[in-house]
Image (cartoon, rainbow, N blue to C red; front, side, top):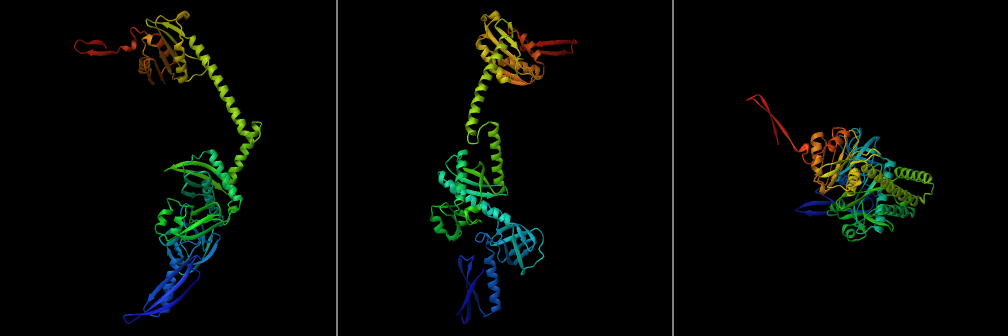
Length: 497
């Protein structure tokens, strides 16, 4: 409390004089406070002690940083010490709140590492045990670089929200946070925030900075603030405070944004500097998070992006403004070439399958082989096998008397195998794969018309040989031989199941 006046009234109660010491003062030059200390004796020493305690308590109930954010050095009286935690009769250190981190600095040259508001007291945590004592005056010095960064960052969050008011529908405020590299603002909105939206948010924000709009703050009655439709409230941090508070601090950017806020801000938007939007994400609860940077991080990001754009434009022999058109044209060319390559590869694979060895069984013509002309993945081989099955010729280019089976074996150390069979072949492709994996390991599966497996623990030539020896009428893998030793007559019995 920087200024106060007092007067005394005397009343008589049950034969005793009652002295009422009335104190009139202002906190941070905004709110008038009236305090009454009642005593039964005209004791000036007692009165001064009581007034000092009351004023000290009122002084450090809240930090003065939000209302006087440019103060970097001050003198205060120590009111309490608990280890490395110190309380003062007043402070300009910002206590961590609402997403803004606490100030750093020094108290009598001892580093302040944390500032928190606990109940009605602002507690300063020091890096070491203080050498001063309660009642002594100390000098507080606030780190100018960090405070200035927080002021710019916090004001920038209001600017971005103001930009959101202009392009986002059903906009709500979900909070924000500052760290040393970037700042986040959480929105609730029905608008899908895509890349184009981010660009427009950044453009509008920097436009408002260039327009040098004044930033002001005042404390108004809670009923007045909540009645205003233009005031943005943080639904997570302000509602709980508003329920018990008689007044609310309002921060207004002239003609741009109005919000309930207890942070530190610059006096004019031109002090924020350039704002660079970095990314967006969805943290949940219907929120969209926009991350941005001010200061060196934002400047460095812009320089990196500009350098990359110029280098890319040079490499593509175009200008930065025509870069997107050039990129789209190149993508279309790539897609066309990719389609042509796929067509050529498909023709190569189809030709290779047509040259596979043909094996006639009682029910089908098998074409078994590996594709060595190009590298083929299992899925691509499977699609090729299905295509070949639809147009598979018989031996000597005649249609087969029965059905067709196409089997393609990979060429890797642990090869894959795909089998496609038509209904007329009486071959169950899934059963073929099951028996191959039972014998050679690996895994796979499928249905009667198509199946594939992989990771076989044998060579591709062994798998091809096994498939060529397939006898549909009596396939070897349909039989399980059980060997038992009979102790009665020392004989070996083979049970075929």
